[in-house]
Image (cartoon, rainbow, N blue to C red; front, side):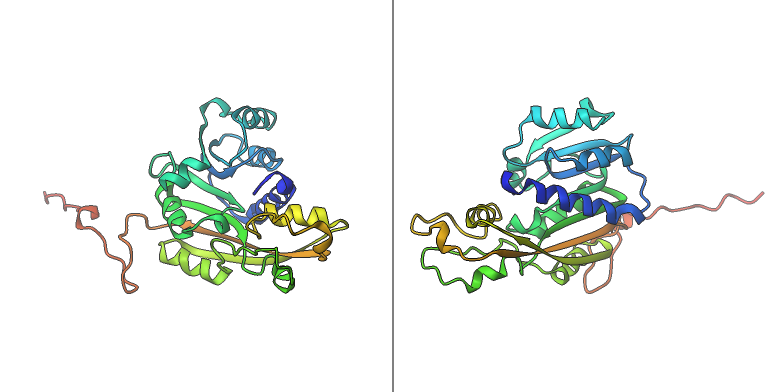
Length: 265
């Protein structure tokens, strides 16, 4: 996601928070990935006023910008927060936070940009505490479907890195041991008055590889594009169980506590 579509990132974050209204969760620590200087941080701060926030900041967001936004949002734990860049996760495949350290993972419009969403889910499982929740949104495979009908030799279309529909994601969550996944999807239509605006957005959405010099604004005749927005959440339960095999979960004998009966009088 890039600056031209910051408003979209904020809008979807707000919709994610609305979906959390019915979820009861004791939150002490939150992982926001990607973290960006949006108005949703104020809502998070109000809902979880005592929570500490771990930030995986997206590219192009300065430390000062995040500090200022969180200060305005009245994060009580502002100076105790742990921040690392998204680029660090993309290169290492690991969040720079300990195991079992957060109660909520909040991920807004990221998964479609990852080459391996399953690995992301594995990392979320690692850092979530028992009973924690992952909530996320991403763009589904119907995003920008109107572009496929264009006959422009200079426009090189690009598929999303992870074109998963909500059923694919639901299966992946179960495969990574998450419980009770809830998936939802909606279509949003973006209408445009000027071709230049549409071209800027499809570049920001990474639906084309680049802006070829032979493609001009006049050649882009679309007036709208469709976004398929997929939402989901799932619980981290039974973290002491080994990963299931053939629908059977195995427990390490060392994890089984043994109770002894007191000697009779």
